[in-house]
Image (cartoon, rainbow, N blue to C red):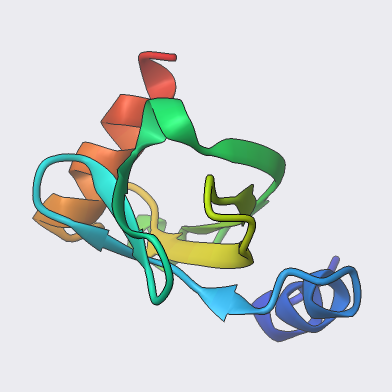
Length: 96
């Protein structure tokens, strides 16, 4: 099974190099185009990681194309360990 670091490196080799972050309101932020609603982005790949015994070890990594043309990665805890901003982004994605 691929680790988070291996997935980030693999996606980086495919051009997904910008680090994206969740901000309040269920949106992602990149350094170039600012905060963008999830309806404006394209998720190219999603990788989910599960802990062996602890549900709080779950995480998710997404390869995302932003409307400004930046390709980036967005990583988040998944489940109980997710921050409120990350939960909003994940809910916005689920609603698409």
